[in-house]
Amino acid sequence: MRRLLICLLALFAACAVRGAEPPRLDSADYDYPVLHVRGQHSASFGEMRPNHFHSGIDIKTDGAEGKPVVAVASGYVSRIVVSPTGYGRALYLTLDNGYTAVYGHLSRFRDDLEQFAESERRRLRRNKVDLGCPPDRFRVCRGDRIAFSGNTGSSFGPHLHFELRETATQRTLNLVRQGIARPEDDMPPVIVRIRYIETDTVQGVPVHRAPAVCDAVRVDAGTYRLARPTPLPVGANGSFVVEATDRRNGVTNTFGLYRVTLYVDGEPHYEYRMDGFTFDRSRDCNVAACYPVQVASRNEAIRLARVEGAPDFFCPVAVRRGAVGAAEGERRSLRIEAEDDCGNVSRLDFEVVGRAPWHAVRDTLAVRCDRTRTHVLTCPGARAVLPAGALYESAFLRLRPSGVRIACDTSLLVLSPAYRFLPCTEPLRKPAEVRIEAYVPEALRPHAVLAALDRRGRPTYVGGTCSGGGVTARTAVTGDLFVAADTVAPSVRPLFGEGADLGAARRMSFRTTDNFSGIASCELRIDGEWVPCDRQPVRGTVTHTFALPRTGARHTYLLEVRDRCGNAARRTGTFVR
Image 1 (tube, rainbow, N blue to C red):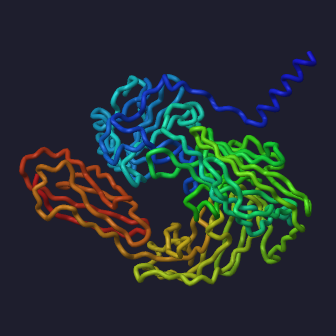
Image 2 (cartoon, rainbow, N blue to C red; image 1 turned 120 degrees about the vertical axis):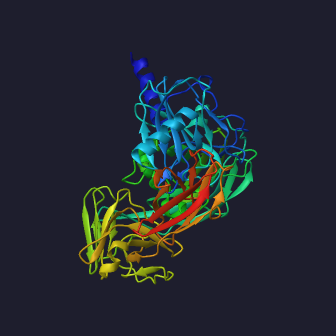
């Protein structure tokens, strides 16, 4: 009995170090989702994207649209989406084995699915639809063609976004690690540099010192050292950030990492690992990464510590939450291992030495904001309400005029100074309610919103409503916020001549642009009848696929386009078909 207990304890300890393993899938149970491609990828699972983890793999379609897309296993089409953003045209297959397959950025569905989506769009008079389907409506067998690859939605080139989720929980799965997709890859990750961020605690709030940065130098394939010849100085308490990237054979794309492990004096101290996530946790990429570094880098900047508001699904090992420190003069040996999802590993070995303690000095005018509580920040002219859980970690914050000069063209009217309670390099997990007071003439009130300056100082749309002498918005955008009014309507230009003969064309297209807020909606009528149209924000086009028969008759069209500040443009004309 004693020997059995010892074995069980050892097994428990091993599982605690490695973390709970994901469910294992058998690649023999699945077909490849797209035909007639080389099987190369342009993005990996779990990559750090702006405010979300990438939830699937992006399969290259060799620069072309229209590749046949097939059911990877038997089941039924449970959801059909047509949207100008996100996955664009997308199909969701609920599989008989308990998983859901998702296909994104499709050009079109197979005929019966396309006809169903088209009829529902016409019935609802909506260009954007999200349609649920019962299990007996569209059954599919493994290998059936269900759609054709494309470049719709938030896509910057032809490819297929594909993912598998557990149907019951909608938890996504790492398909390459599971062996469902097997790209050619014998290239270990590239470790670019590390950062050490010392942390002091003031009134229970973590205050961080400016990072110490040190480049990594490649010794040989998979082996790195620090560029500095002497041990890296560290404080009594701090954490590391590793900046790294990955490559695969035959493509120029960069990819995210599967696992990064920090060893301290030979023992596992912290591990980041990306096996899967549920979508309510996707925004937590902002704390899995070191956000200020991540948004400015082409590499991944993975934080080797767990901040107080971070979940634990991506860090199965977190001794002292990953914090590393040394007494003054003390030396410690560290190793960082970076692994891609194909199993290639790179290692960086280095030493640290303890330095004199650092003590943070807080801003005495700032408010202590506990991340578990709601806080109201005010100053003359502005107010911000941070709900409980909005911050990833507690902080000292102060709402105040930022004093920045807002430079923008004459198409945008700036109606207030800029205010800031967090820099744009610090994210929020939940939206804050921000109100900025401003004098807004009555004629401008329907067009007044909150705007923000991006990292390059350019105005970007935030949103909100104007009332009572100011604008209020719920937003997770941080940085310099101000009131602006946009009264300029979008521009619309047909990509065919007036009265053109479109008898040989499958579709008619228009070019649309907007000066600030972006296109919110479009409505197309042919001969007075509402017809569906597809908006492609990345391309700046609106397209209608003809259902009209080719009779040689002359037709009229009316396209109305609205931006998010309430401005509308109308374009009318004729064509022959």
